[in-house]
Image: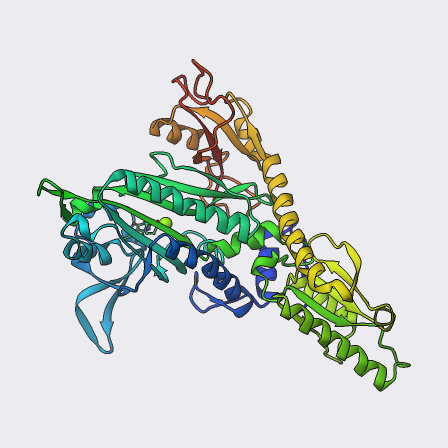
Length: 503
Ligand SMILES: O=C1CCCN[C@@H]1CCCn1cnc2cc(F)c(Cl)cc2c1=O
Ligand SMILES: [Mg+2]
């Protein structure tokens, strides 16, 4: 496992793969689209769970677990809602040497598993709201080019499925969850996202409306859907006959939401923050936040001096752990400090603390930040306050840097003529739009700058057309001007919409 051999901006696919493999985050597996998530990456998922779990519990959501197998008749009960998805359903057809009487689907999502039971558990409005969540894996046998974390045939996620007596309650919860997703990205992963509503073409067809947080990968200039929170309306409660008795004793359909966040979060964080030295971890998700390295040991160093140095390193670790900092010392005596610097920089550890004889004499340590390389002498006397503050500063600076980069890549256009050129310059476009599906389809065709398939072999040939990413909840000041035209057709514009090529 050595350092990277390519630069992020020269060969992004190889850079991404080398970062994941050489930091021991991930391992390729014998089945295409399936990957091993190793501790260095799994820890990030755990930190996300540790943030999101208590927040939804606070909202009254309860965790549960439903089976991963779906009888064929249940999955195909309502043709329309899974129409278009069926090619990606994985089926169990045999156990041992004998075929199964009925094929069994592996869950791609759990609506058809859970909602028959929602129908039997919900009888009156007193049974509402029902709010369940599960942390699990799902399988979708996609045929598009797989990418670790971003597009995999099995992935981990949480899926929330909630039921309410009124649309108003459902509308409120959709946004509460979306705000939590925004916080997962912006506060935990230091990745900026744009919250908004999906267009009619891009929304979950089985629902009433979809809200989303949209990420952006500057290196490819492509957007990426970060997480979604859908209002399902009464569509599924009609499909699954989930009824409640209202105050007048009438049986009426209930209102539902469903929302999901996946291990794609990890891939987005790697791509946004990583650099040519490797991974750059936001402190909030780093399993090691500070690595302490004894330095200045030479052939002339006596056994006693060396042991004193190691002891000092351990003392610093103990001090940091007491203040809640995840610290470790690297006392391996068969590696040089330089080797150790590279080892931990590759793995993205946010802060390095060097301790040599001179530092000990001055009761100091030399700190070096992974995100911007800035070094500073810290007094050991105030380390317990300085290091947590420094880690918070790194978290904030990483977010600010990523946000400035993202904001610089959003170009506001009022008409078509610079649209494709702006996309080819690896930017997103914010433009006044009519919100018509036919117009979106038209833009997708007109902005595909070659006949190639809809997935470029590598990130260099952005051949695919643009799609709407979201209609940002935060519209430009004043919103669409009176009488303004859609940037792509002659219809009246109704909102400013974010467009781009995406994963
Ligand atoms: O996005 C979420 C959040 C968490 C709960 N689910 C919703 C909707 C999921 C849409 N969707 C997404 N992908 C699917 C793939 C499939 F093979 C089948 Cl059968 C269905 C679907 C499907 O309904
Ligand atoms: Mg899909």
